[in-house]
Length: 272
Image (cartoon, one colour):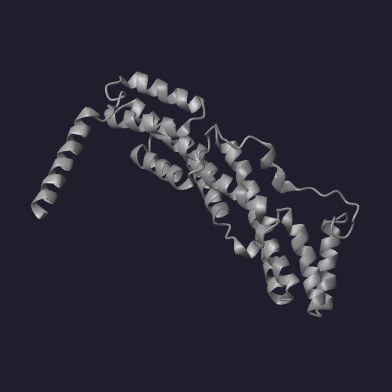
């Protein structure tokens, strides 16, 4: 019986091998394509929004033609394609790889800019929920990383065509970091932790003097001083608050409410 079973297993194995020989693996039609055709096809996939297909073609191009301008361009396109698919980790890895391999490339400033955009759009996602989610549940890490990336571009390439936009986004990110501090201060205030709230509000006033969130931070300081019974400090803060924000929305219900953080949601965030 054992012998018959062994013969059956061997026969099935041979049949399996035969079946494989009857249906050979599909060959890669791009294997022998010239670099120009590979690049053109990949760009066509990109234009159609088929980013995963484009990535595969650009990777094939880099494998087949690892040297020269086409390979460097393919690496840039791969980073951008991953960015468009919202694969932050892969996009950042591709950007860092390009910067390391081509620190003096004529378009390396764009890769610095793209690194900022990748983190910036992740930060935009943070702001989209910060008004409905407990702010202490999220670490604004992407905000800081986006600011650092844009600052690296401006410092290293002050004459870059991307410098002006990077500076504008840096200003926005400073506002975002200030707003985060105010959200945390509000969180503590709602829970009766007035001293902790006061400290966070004071940090926002001290560290982000030109940010729109400074107005709310001063207002929170007034409220916390009152809760803590520090009435003299409350009055001093109130004088500063009134002088700087005579028509504040926090004391005047009819004052216009400007949502500075919605600015980028109305603009082109692709960077390309």
